[in-house]
Length: 352
Ligand code: SAH
Image 1 (cartoon, rainbow, N blue to C red):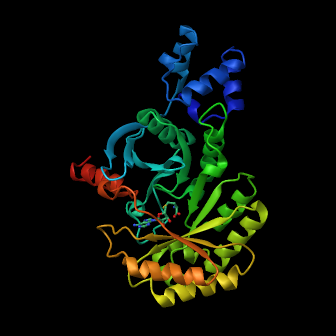
Image 2 (image 1 turned 45 degrees about the vertical axis):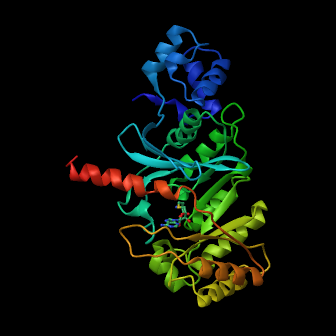
Image 3 (image 1 turned 180 degrees about the horizontal axis):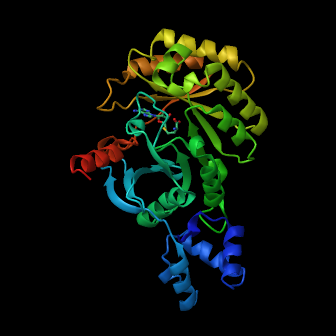
């Protein structure tokens, strides 16, 4: 088994170099190169014997670009990556006025079972290694030739279900000798793993936490998000308040608008009521409204613009802030999970 070098934090890399009889500063050189997506053979300030030793003992788990789609509308770029064992995951590169942001995957598949989500249809195959999460950012930046200054963990997978690898990834992507992406430019989205939220609050990382709420009552939430049967809305919002009190970081709630299910006036009123009951004045409430992106396998339809506007207006009137997510890359299937499914479907049809 070769050592997965790209998943190592600096201290571990120093130990690894020491084990090879190399001085400590080699770790810094190797770290810099790896985080630029460089192969061992091209690490030009290392001796040839050292480069050869590295290739024998270690491996760099950069994902390979399997497919790439560029939106003709807004320049959004979608990558389908192939990992070392043939698994596929997706990332989306987005241009915003404040810089380039990438949305990355944290697992190959997902076991959370949200009814509206394409990523969970085939279940979870495996967790991604820190190197494979970092590799998505490194290789997209290298391919685009433009700096990436923000990361959102909103691709395939549930980040808090791959907790240790995700925390390690966050340390690595923030490292000043590597990509140096500020924690304040990183968002982590969860479907509501309360134990993970409480753990994350203790990590002292000033990232932004997003919570996928999507329904205002336990009856509806349990129906569309199975995790709600383990931790209900009261428990989830309780964890959100604890997180805010511990970290001082505002939380953003995601609310996917599904026509006739959760986008009604009653839905908005129930949402306000849940927030009043379980959050009250303990923290500011921001709701990010996302028109549902219908997937072929499920019969969900997006709210119309008028309903979305009214929903947002109702929340604003009741003391919350609400934004409606702009849809990027609508022409390239930019919502996560769709390409991976198509690839998996292909290999099933080919009997692979
Ligand atoms: N597992 C994490 C992060 C991945 S999903 C989570 O659940 O938060 C990122 C966001 O996209 C979540 O809010 C998720 O609920 C939402 N999402 C999933 N499928 C969607 C769809 N078809 N339309 C709109 N939003 C969707």
